Image (cartoon, rainbow, N blue to C red; front, side):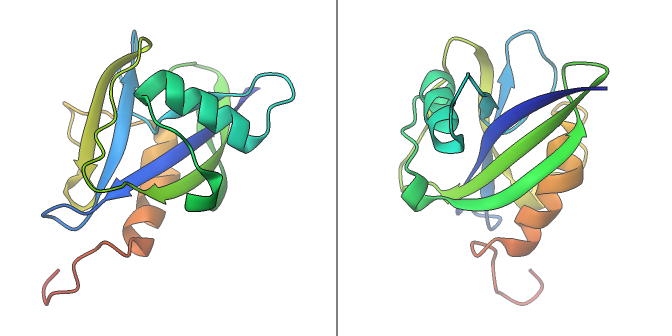
Length: 149
């Protein structure tokens, strides 16, 4: 199986349900995923992520404000027969931050972490559903601490 190496950002913000995650759907694809993308020759994680976030959602990546979650693997969402290996960072969104949709992006949405239950209208990439969402839900400091939450 061929491997695709990417860097991605889990951008989270507080919302009524506790926390929301910014996801994108690229043009010509059906699954939502974290913003980010493939490395160009010689790029570091920070350089790749800075370039991809600027192109995809108009954001400036500050590695000092992000936490490296680790490297994760799953089958590629849009490339059958490929495995994606993603170095993923987590960052809290600044208040009022509303990323834009770049040329290669079809859709950009905030997804409530606790409300994602396999909605067929919002298919998610395997890397997101199998590896990242469970970790983000468990580790989110933005989750409500009220009884029954």
